[in-house]
Length: 347
Ligand code: SAH
Image (cartoon, rainbow, N blue to C red; front, side):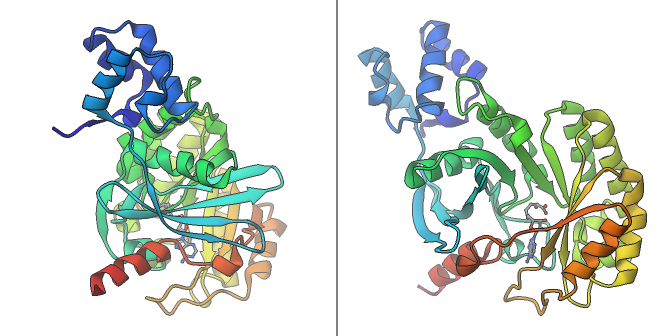
């Protein structure tokens, strides 16, 4: 019998499990806080539960763990990049970043990705599977355990498209923000999407308080179609309408990611089109990212990042350039997993 994945149960679900085992409801609260607040790795550590219950839990449930396959730590700024292995042998990356205001973590939501963005390493080896709520959560728990650092904020910007694994990601957010668990306010969470429009609207209706980051990378359908296949399903105009809706429902300003690629999207005409597109959405924020060069494509970093930024800010559009963290361990998103997958292939 495969054991049930206990870390993926929300508190009400755990209450239902334990009452089905003949336990009082409050026991679920105790167990939940052992699992998510104290983050125990075995049921035996739950000292206020009866021996009989611990045996029952051991027989029917498992507390999943992740294995660290690789760990790279930057000597420049302490950024740590982990390659984790899930119980079925699949792998994904997590990045722990230290800022003056605290530690932030970037987690993966899928093994591989279906979205096919031309500049992104995560999608090159294709899609394998969705991550479970517990597997997303464990990237935080294991990184905290290993590094001894406490994570205060989170970005869903690792491997995968979070809105393509909607239910598991929403459950993960419920677990993350639970008072009896890590208790992280969703105001400290950013979710990045390539633009799955119906899901953006659904998320807006849920009014979770999280920040929506939209990977825009080009302001016109012509340019966006060429680098992001999702644009052929939901075009730029639909995407901008959904962003307006998100802002109107939540009051949270949208953050747009724009990876500057030399000769592709870093010219003044593109900047002007971007300004025109985003003006109705102001106040919003543009995060300019010098593109990470990946092996599979000839894309080069733009040299015009500051010029591009100036054009935006001079027109009243708030724009910052993303600071490069961990430059000495730099591997573009998904590159660690790619490397480990291709090494295994050769064995
Ligand atoms: N699927 C989600 C989240 C994961 S990617 C999304 O598309 O938003 C996180 C961010 O990194 C996205 O903005 C993505 O477009 C960007 N990105 C991917 N590859 C990159 C590269 N080679 N250089 C710079 N940014 C990249």
